[in-house]
Length: 229
Image: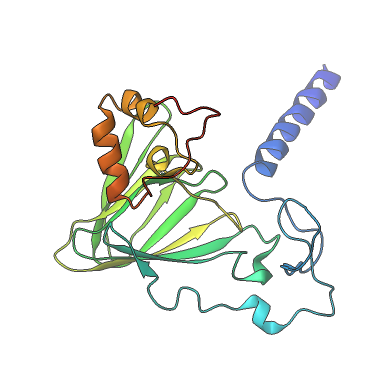
């Protein structure tokens, strides 16, 4: 009996440990591992600079001090992650900032490597995500409120206020990645028009028009060995 109890406890601890280990980036094995952008070593992340060559500037960034570049959805997105802030390497976190024009949309997307939590700096937005059971969870969020999007689920934010809105975004990954829902339209080499048209139950003409609006060149190569169009 005692053995079985110990066995069950050990299994429980193992499950918790495995789940924790897979919930975010791996824990660091040293105090700092500042990303060496010039290294030719291929690892899961960046190789470390020598402990004697990093600088205080590696641990600071102005990447989200101002709004990012505008896009066609009425938002400006700025990010502070391991790709522009080397001190974040192996620390399992990053930040972003999204500024919304009136009616601005941060369109549906997912982060395959991170859970996301947002803090509303100003304005009011609809924030929502879709579970793998196709349940839509949404809420009107206002200044001072936080909202979390579970790891890898499709989500969005939409400015429904009378003025501009801004949010700060935190991730439990140094490089969360982003997969927009419109990936089928903007992938290069492109997915054949007929495949996208059948997926969305529309026609090739509509697909080509959507691609044009999203700025995809008309002459990009198909992602197939032969042109089937």
